[in-house]
Length: 167
Image (cartoon, rainbow, N blue to C red):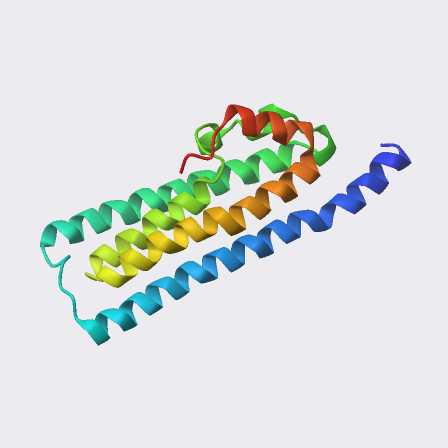
């Protein structure tokens, strides 16, 4: 590897950490949404999701969301270990659930927490999770996309054209 590649690699490494910090803030807000939802349910005692069907739906969502998160994390771990950052092209991004949506971990987290909210019969948690999901899409995912575009350039731009951020 020549000196220019080494210098560029050193400059790019902190950006990966920024993405993880950004995502951790997003995940913390999801946690806060559940906590606030439970508090509001205690204060206002609204009973809409009381049937056992909601518990089954909640369990299915928890399992589906967890599997999606695992699949996404496993995919990125495997892909990152086999490709150097400067050698990544659009094919780097088109693996696993990333073929279908650009943010499968975020969507999986939403499914998991939504399932938990149904399981504990928390109407306000469901409402706050849905609001949090859209806030996450508008703030955190938008910022993550700009960081990845800066880091990977045309490879990420091509990926964005090919795979929509539909969820």
